[in-house]
Image (cartoon, rainbow, N blue to C red):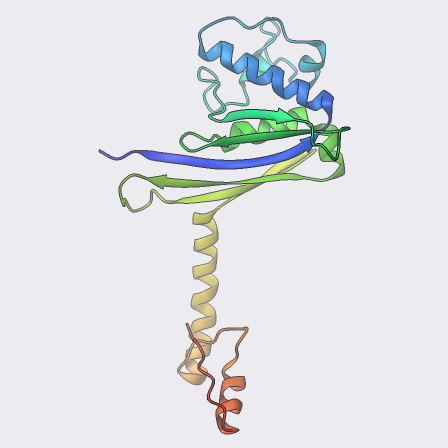
Length: 204
């Protein structure tokens, strides 16, 4: 039996009003996960998460989760005011087991519009396994904007890198019988050897 983990840890700054929305979201999540009914959402929360079902004020919040019946962010949540910047709040989100990139990105996009108008917020995550199973290791990164989000996984990056490297390597091998490191061209090494240099290089 093997255990798979999704892990992540990141922090960001936001306004006090945005932190209040994030805190309300976590309180609702805790209540739903405990099979309790949370208190009615605040007007500010309803504006950030407009209901998608008229008879359910929490429906706009629940749809940000991959499984609305399991509205868990999968992280520990901490917040405070940095000593040097009392005008903002700092949010710290972390987990070593069940980090939920999609839901966390949606949380930030809905709650932090003022901050996102100034600059995007991003985070990374890692996937690991208790056994060395192929395909169970990787991760990714997410960038959140006021009007959307962008995700990139290591699997997609590796596929792209292998595709580009195969083309470059084929061209290099046809010219020199070597595949070149772009930062250390063979021509530089050959010139140094011709001039009596003894530097050793690495050629992938």
